[in-house]
Image 1 (cartoon, rainbow, N blue to C red):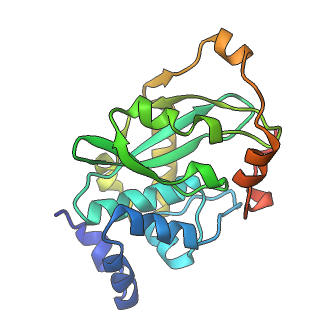
Image 2 (cartoon, rainbow, N blue to C red):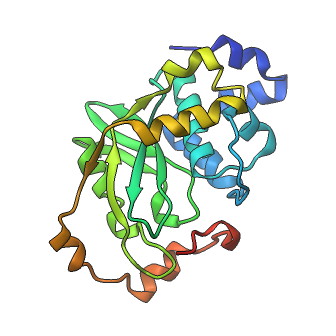
Length: 212
């Protein structure tokens, strides 16, 4: 099991106790679900998420990656790419028995946890397709990036330093992308029906919704 020493040293006793309880992907997701969604235009490192008890999708994915690392998983994230009328969405990835799952913080109910049942990353990302929509009820998911291993940012103390967050966000913009739909597929997409739309926005922070 990997333990990040600089992260552990930064935690007080109460924070160490909190992290010790996040000993499974399900419990990490439950922690993220219990804190508010941030509409602020700032990034928080995992330590700051733990202290402030608030996160957006980027912050939440990095926190989840840090928590997964503490229980033996590599700290992997993946960025899901929309069209120009929506926000991207970041996942923390984990793999069990050869299958991928994900943890995420989202303003939308359907863009959060995925069980480790997906044979490859394309299959995992496609499981989000119908729930990935904007406030105009348009289905906006178009692609995804290669996984990014946050171990490469250890020299910038990404788990405890807000200053490293922009470096990670910039790297996500640079790495290879895979696209899911052809132009013909995109032209034929239906809009999200009213029931799914309302269900997906249950409990959403309206200030944090992307406005096309």
